[in-house]
Length: 125
Length: 154
Image (spheres, each protein chain N blue to C red):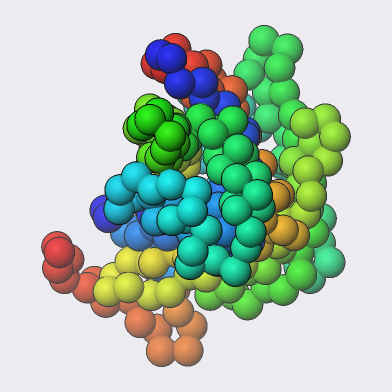
């Protein structure tokens, strides 16, 4: 894949509110630095600096359109982050699937004060 | 069972939720009894937790040591701050990889949900950068395996 991806850099890039706002804007479609700078009280060089971080992380790409350099989301980078989070979820889920089994093997503790031990009807949701 | 959710909140939080079929008392026990923890808090297949210290009282120590049985391993250390049986646990933890990661402040709630439990784990990292690093390197141990798989995919 041509678009370089660095997960560490990608997640670090997200750790900044301005950069997240830029991504949110780019999610609606491509935009130039001028257009991106408008909603922020920041100079264009400052926005360019943020864009550089996002580009180096592989989650924003630029297109050459004569004199314009519109930026867009880099699909591969965004998808890779998605995959990573999905995998993190999966690993956690594995632990909790095991915990389900552990819980199934434990007698429910008796509640002393009202001796509430009546079997509750399993209402499957 | 409903699926696990994992999401970021604000700049420094990560929130995980999961439902369990057992009542809060039981789920709480499974989070504080070393014998039970060793059965499930293991990460990928093949990993075990030969050392599990869990002193479930305010100020009590936490130490989990994992190994893949092939010479790889690492550990987590932490301290309990607050415990409200059987509804809430607050603790701090850090991974040693081998250098300690910044403290992760974790509040875990166990709320009755019908005949089961809704667990909500809210992690607070010192800053956005640390949270990003945690998500990038994998907050759970043994993520290396997943990472290798991911690299294979890209």
